[in-house]
Image (cartoon, one colour):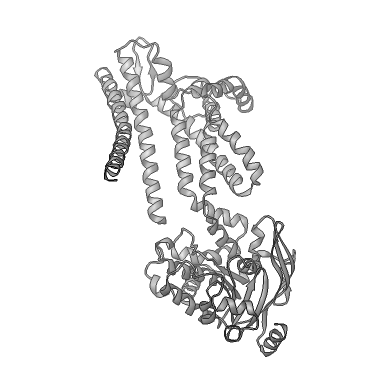
Amino acid sequence: MNRRHKHSRAIERIIEGSLVVCSLASILILAVIFIFLFYEGVPAFRDISPHEFFLGTVWQVQAVEPAYGILPLLSGSTLVTTGAMVIAVPLSLLCSVYMAEVARPALREITKPFIELLAGIPSVVYGFVALTVLADITYELTGAVHRLNALNGALILAVMVSPTIISISEDAIGSVPREYREAAYALGADRWQTTSKVVFPAALSGIMVSIMLGLGRAIGETMAVLMATGNAPLLTFDILSSVQTMTAVIAIEMGEVTFGSTHFHALFAVGLVLLLITSVVNVTAEIVLQRFRSVRY
Amino acid sequence: MSSRLKEGKENLVERTKIQVKDLSVWFGSTQVLRGVNLDIKENRVTAIMGPSGCGKSTLIRTLNRMNDIIANCRTDGAVLLNGRNILDSTIDVVELRRKVGMVFQKPNPFPKSIYDNVAFGPKIHGMARGRELDELVERSLRDAALWDEVKDRLKMSALSLSGGQQQRLCIARALAVEPEVILMDEPCSALDPAATAKIESLMVSLKKNYTVVVVTHNMQQAARVSDFTAFLYLGEVIEYNDTKVVFNNPSNRLTEDFITGRFG
């Protein structure tokens, strides 16, 4: 009896230990990535002044006098990501409310797997569709100068992030306790009032999480955006212009760069900026969520 | 049974607020209520008691059409509120639920501030705003005997309150839309004895201005708070009379067995 007790204690300890190792590993990996990017990115500033890098308006690596200004890439990423979120968030939230509150269960059972399947399509396939089909449509409809432009990228990105937002928001809305709905109905609220004033606010923290995850995916997405946006590093705020995102520039140029060159380090510096941006987004999301929770509970 | 029931009824001089006539309710193919007849008197507390699964909750939820939410629910018969049949399809359910408020078994305040919980009903019905709304909220909280405990923290989350306070908040929330009838579905079953005592005394004080219907599986509670008691068994009203009569001199053997704790 005593021995068995000791035995189970030992197993407990092994399990606990391995869980600690797993959670520490994720921190360690993140730290290593950060250090690596830092280590390879910072040498860029031996040849490029921080002023030129952060405030330079031209990214021109092939020229005789190469220019490494990150602003065009930042503007490209910002345009495409913002555009995608502006399109995706309202549509996805309406869709999730419909699925969770209005749609008959049978319909929900059919549509939900399809929506989740959308999240599983490889991004290169989305990119291909954007490059060949969607580009023609946006080009025709908007009369843009460039056939491949930021709007095209934003549209395809919106389709790509929607499944994440819809699926997680729908779960959040669906898990709002039935008691809240009953309380609202019993007070004479109609269905719309119940949904908009009780259910939606109660699900808000989950909805925020879904939006932040979608945003994270949008910022980090590379292949589809690369194929859809035309890859011209122009500093612009025109959604109908060709742009190049930070992710795309790394993906395209990293393959041909001389190892250890200024260009090489500059791409790492871009990667470092990208990582900082996504970290800020995540931390902001976390803070927002904490605040929501402290208000509500 | 019927002679005593009739005799009891004749003694009642109160105005009837809700008249339930031959009410039957089915969920799918299961019949939950079987031809229920009940006269609920104005400004009185009426208790509906009975063992689990006898249809108490279904009966009370029919009185404000909350069963509408359940997909395969079917009703037959009539429920007259102030003489109008509320089961009629032309009845405005929103208007009905304003007149017939409800408090649930588990306290279910919204995850909003105390103030916003009480203000919810008045706001969606456009009843009051600004100072007027503040006054309505205060009045409702006072009527629910909660004002003194929460007046300094109206902006705090309702979920920070204790279970008993939450339930009184739910009562305040129901009172804020100025209903005529308050339905309570086992309002104390999730509460400790002290909180239960508060809610019980509240029920008694509420009957001055409201008609109160309370479902309970707790006989002592029915005996303490109610003026009339209905005993429901397997979807039928076995006995309905003055509470004193039901408890001291029940006409039906089943009622007696239930009251004396032989089953239930």
